[in-house]
Each structure stands twice: as C-alpha cells, then as structure tokens.
Length: 114
Image (cartoon, rainbow, N blue to C red):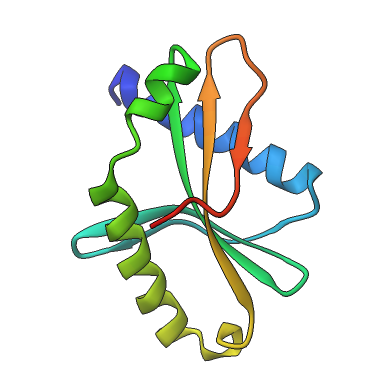
C-alpha cells in the first residue's frame, strides 16, 4: 500500500471518529460507483450527509484539493445511493467536507455548494 493511500485511510478514520463524537451514525464507508466514490455517508437525526474527506499537510492544501468535478461526482453518486435506499428519500441531506491537516483538529464543513 502506498504512503498516500495510508494517509487517506488515516484521514477517513479521523473523520469517522469526529462524526461519531458529533452524534452521526456511519451508513457507508467508501461507497464506490463507476465514475465516483463517496468517502463517508453518515446520518444524524433526519439528515444524511455525503462527505468528502481531504487529508493533506495543511488546511490550505486540503481546501485546494476540493474540486468542482469531485463535488459533482459526489452529488451524482448520492442520487444513486438515494435511489437504491428509498428509506432515506424523506431525509434532509447535505454535502460536507472534512479537512484533516497535519497537526490540526479536523474541520467539518457542512453544506458545501455543489
């Protein structure tokens, strides 16, 4: 396994712990589809969050790594998820990002514009 893959797994692990502490229940981890992946799908109350995790050396590099194309793919994958899990269709939903930077507390940004 490459170093960057390990760092990505670590970032997703940190993000999962943060979400648990905030009262979220993890529904799916690394939800893969042809043409895209959602790092974490989580639920808290009546809200489903589709979450992209970025792990970099600094928060600035995390923010730069979030591209409109990635957010578009997440949105498309989320529609596929909801279509295949109709019990969640009446839930509110959001597209979130969690930034995991070296030597910083992870930052959860909710309701990112897609």
